[in-house]
Image 1 (cartoon, each protein chain N blue to C red):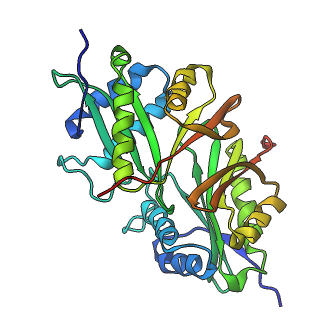
Image 2: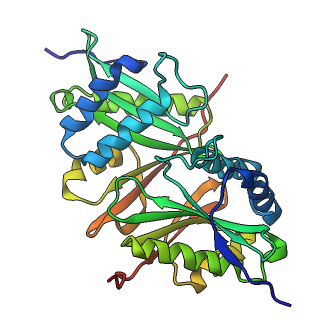
Image 3: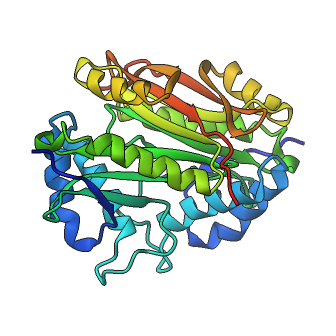
Amino acid sequence: MTDVIRIGPLNPTHRNQVEAIVRATGVFSGAEVGVALELFDETFTDSGQRTADSDYEFVGAFTSDGSLVGYGCFGATPATDQTFDLYWIAVHPTAQRTGAGGTLMTEVEQRLQQRRARLLVVDTSSRDDYAPTRRFYQKRGYEQAARLRDFYGRGDDRIVLTKQLPAAALP
Amino acid sequence: MTDVIRIGPLNPTHRNQVEAIVRATGVFSGAEVGVALELFDETFTDSGQRTADSDYEFVGAFTSDGSLVGYGCFGATPATDQTFDLYWIAVHPTAQRTGAGGTLMTEVEQRLQQRRARLLVVDTSSRDDYAPTRRFYQKRGYEQAARLRDFYGRGDDRIVLTKQLPAAALP
């Protein structure tokens, strides 16, 4: 039986689930989990309101029973003309065959296309355990634009993937 | 008569001078000036204390009469092993023959070397008006590591320069 993944907004109550998802992927270091939560905290204030001036936007993937199983985080790259960073797409390992990752990606791209985004940029690592991540993006049209040797650490290069978004057909 | 440039700390009272310096360089867009001030504001609280958890560090270049004529802003790149971003070195045009830029650069590199930084990363633009900036870094051992086409805008590529810092000779 295949569960249907629904897209929906995140709110401050999802913090623990976001942390659990990022940890469960097994590819992120403690520092990276910290960064993921820092972006979350900068976006969602304690009062439950989305911070108006946050540079980050979140979108969640939910199962039919309302459980959060994945999320995407993206935002405009400061001081660029319509370039956006895709900071994370993370899906809990138990949901990685449900298409949640692809559904999140499609949602992010559609939203950005409506806003006439021009270029999407994803940073990832050259490490072997990121091979599925790189394949995920490459299958969806992201191309390697740069490789920064030893960026994350010795032998751990930064791979920059980019995708040009077609001009949206808007009414 | 050549004035001697002194290195010193910044504090919240320098905000207007920082803005004046960045604007006077003539190469930064309004959005980029906004980013420069955002980093400043994230670092210096209204109470005059440096924010403990800021990701940014500032260093100023002063003339002998105490005027701020340039500054550098740098910080550890999150989730990396000893990689640092050099966000800006900006010097007021009236002081660009005083060696203030080189003095700031040397100061930043020495501080980072003492902290066993491994890699310094600078992002800059491919535009013609950034040619002096690129030469400034290249003369000081920064090498082009990547070029991201149309990153800032159409025809405005992002150039990533990096410099490996030698292991510091520490006592």
